[in-house]
Image 1 (cartoon, rainbow, N blue to C red):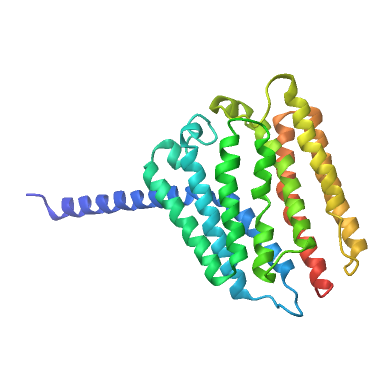
Image 2: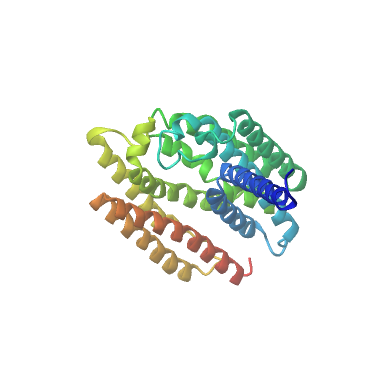
Length: 312
């Protein structure tokens, strides 16, 4: 007959194992949603919402902002989950993604599929009911184009980067539509900035993990002699355009300040892009990636700050 101390030890061990199981399971479900991507999505959505508010006619509503971010987060999480479901076999062939829950087989494919559909469905309905039909429609359009155009094209053509940039730039439009009920030229300027930003950002990632992508059959970069010219074009052309478009401002705002600050940020980003294209090294790619992560929030923060000072 087991003594009290043995029984107590077994119970403690069982509780510890159960705790580890639930922590691992919750961590896997959290990883399915791609939280690092969602963080940037929420920032750009919030900036679009803030700039879409006309303080005189439509003052910023904390509740509306919360509803917008929550609904967008749910749809984005569903999109990330469904993307991992669709690419689980290919992700398993890449060192960078082999440990993802679906790729590693820690979660069943059917479970991942149901979880992704549920998140996306709840998020789209939530946006439609609490925010606006336009915001919900834009979120659903983002999901559909990302999953059914960009995702399959990654194994067919390097033009997938161009196709993927369209849904990738949608978050500011969702935020703007949620705040104002419509879209205007300023909203599309934010869209254009995020659209162009994605090219150097992704080129840095694609170059750092090019062997992984090649091994899994992803054609995000062309093969042979066309690879370097493609890399240079996809990196430098958007960066040059960003220098120009980041300085676009309406006459009623603090244009001179924005021109100078936007130009400094854009030229700094361009410097790292030039370095990357010239050296084509992983270290240069990492610096360009870091510069892209710093550049976008600073530019959007600058825009929001100047808008606030102008009383718009």
